[in-house]
Image (cartoon, rainbow, N blue to C red; front, side, top):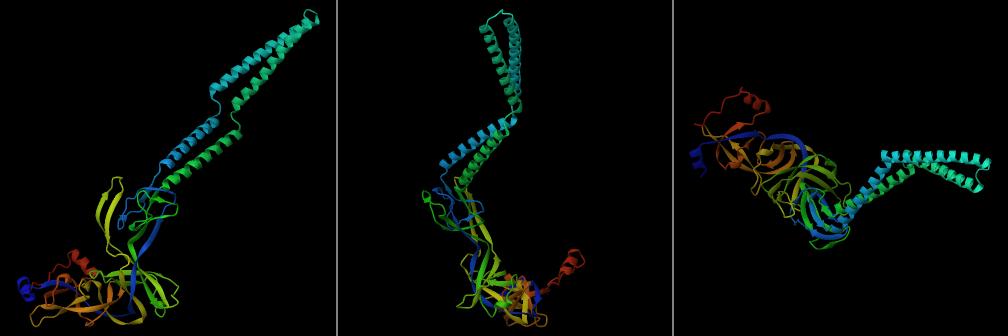
Length: 434
């Protein structure tokens, strides 16, 4: 079949790169388990009855989205009353701070002027009465009545004068301070009720998947009771246990290779995120966490009747999957490396296609070579298999190759060569096969 394809379509152009030998750290595989980067057991901060529960296990939910809604009628009415009471107290404070209106001052000034006129009139009347009484023209009862009118007019003037001063000066500072305190109290009450109202909507703290439900519509939840569990899978941690004799060779930030048996089509690169400095006293192994970027595929985006966003998504790497992490476990030694792009994934084992030169004028062919991968070293990876230093392995076009297929190998371009070709200084194409 391969010979027929070669005859029909001719050799396939491929890009190749050599197998190299370098000093790299010795490593080995450790079995680990995929864990979520974050896990949250989300509970209710208040007591209440569940009126809405729009999520299901497995749903993808964005940060801040509602997990559950509690009944809010009572707390909403209390909050509205508190807001109106706060507004009332604020208006009273504003009235005191504004002081007396011009109309009030004018009215007090007019009353003071009238009181002064009455006082002056009664004072003159008193003086005439005293003169008449001295000459015996009026009796004692008459002068006493006139004196009484004068005293009454004088007291009224004093009263109006004090009232005018109060209107001009405005409220006392103690009254303003009391009004401000009342406003602060009512504002605090309204804020507390607003916070309580906000807590009746239970929200997720981060993007993630609902991994467990703990309530349902109509159920009563108490303060602190669990509503749902959410896990974040945008990044995952592969947790492996490393024996104490190897832990000294592992450093935070090291780039390592991660394989997941359930995902044979993929090879992952992770970074050592945590080396927990507490060993299991029975096995003498230390937990090491390797962080790996995950892929989240959004398959459906809808809204329910209440307007809540419903997202159906599928994470490539799932929590609880088994994984193998290749970690450094010793000093440097010579090893064979090849570009990561040379690996062909998806089969029962990892393979690379090695170019076999053709005899005489025959085109080159490829043969598959099974390999066991090791530690990562930048864009290269350590491998073990029937390879030799200098072997040319296919790094572009290897996805569609078959054993024995004829190829036209082209060396990998360096960054400088690629730039020159883009600028037109390298325009020659490889010769067509005969």
